[in-house]
Length: 127
Image (cartoon, rainbow, N blue to C red; front, side):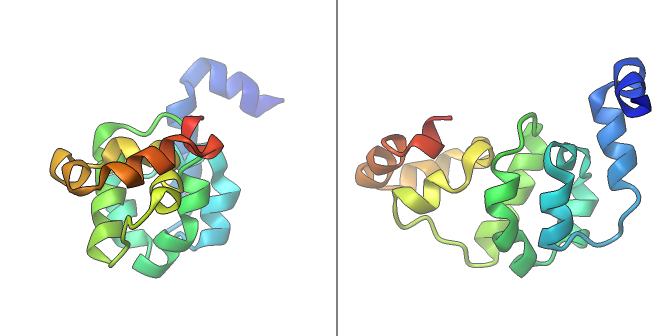
């Protein structure tokens, strides 16, 4: 298991970054396949390597990734919202998974209490 040895020596983030560097574009199939290694996406990768349509299609996979930094999650969320994604109900909020950390305070304040209450009752949101 050389990747495991490499992971221990160099660290998971560097491994993720080196895996991600092998791609220029990130369609949903690649984002799903990257799994946790998607944390290696740079801000430039997010802004330029993922189309709006592909980003929205990849939200379930990206929302399962743990360890996004604040800039990554807010870049993903802002790009998503700019492209027309709307948080209309608890389901669309819960679907963001770990990416909810990227929601800014004004977006959070604009959500109705019902949306937030519905989301926190969903098992996928609690995780």
